[in-house]
Image 1 (cartoon, rainbow, N blue to C red):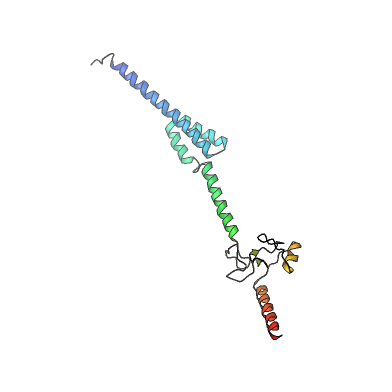
Image 2 (tube, rainbow, N blue to C red):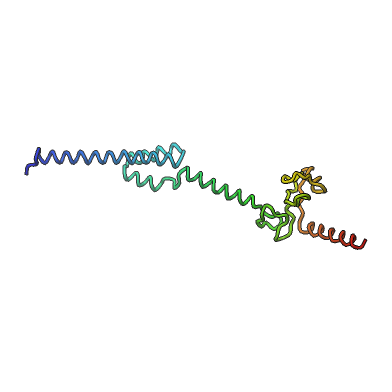
Length: 182
């Protein structure tokens, strides 16, 4: 059988040329894709070179091997994950932990609701919770007075446990009783 415009050898040569061109374009495309992908996944130059050579030498089989061995997340995904973890840790740190019972407490608590450990002291003017080492209230600019303020100026931290809170309550009760008796 004669083909129009040539013999079957010419048609086979054309089909082989198209097939080789297709495989060559596929090979180059896989190598280019691997190069871009590995660049997004690692900064290790040696690993980048090995991955590209693997695909260059073994073509599609090398690409399958690369897909198995490549890092699971891109550098951008790893960075976003680390930012998210850092934000969660910061949120936990901002929430605070009671030094006595080690439970989570809100940052604006004056005492721990579980063990009654005094965490902060209220401002004498506005009543907002103040850290023990502050010299003045950052909300109303009132200077702290009393033992806690002098201790804070010395750089110490007043840390009162349950006993200290109960002792302060007993002192207040005793002073109110003496004022009532007078």
